Length: 194
Image (cartoon, rainbow, N blue to C red; front, side, top):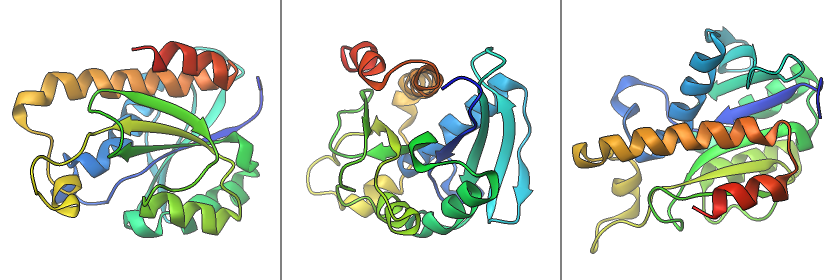
């Protein structure tokens, strides 16, 4: 994989009112990856903020970290536009997203598969014409009691979880970096064990 360009897409909704939402954890990880690489986001004509960087301190790992500036449900257009512009094949795309069916603080990695009701993934799969991109699935857990799922994902992480959210974002960024240089199964063994 070394030397190949990778596209890392963090999913979220644009705008300050959504910044701390559970649904925006993909943006949080993308921001951290760019910060670690000393890269700045700039507006791309595909409808995304992009930061071109070398990630993980290894010179060969060229990446474009992206945050689609469309809303979550239509993330596919900007993602496909960036893949086409940078000539990144689907197997070199990593999508970071929130996942209700994974407990809070857990991370699961996989390639391909269904969208599990996640509209951002559904949009990307449709626009790319393939589900065969890597996913960094960041566990946010299920809403408590009878809270509506949409309200849950569009609400902020509670203050009581702020430290844990910071650790979760750090570990998710570490997992993205690891996927650039190691086989999926090896990275899964590291991050699924926790």
